[in-house]
Length: 88
View (cartoon, rainbow, N blue to C red):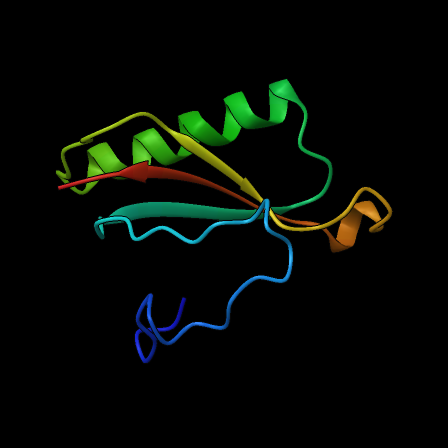
């Protein structure tokens, strides 16, 4: 959520199955890409990101994370995906 909000000032979810929790912030190196994201794509993008992190002398602090933002009906070239690596 934007930093202007706190857990107390966010709108309440209408669905009782949704709950809001506060997590500590972290620093991540992120590689954004579009298209369909199958296992081989994630593996290749993880390798690209790991090389980028190592080349800059950053220290990985956790497992790679995968983020995708679009529903299955979004055209492949319009899909937004990210692979992220927590770093110090």
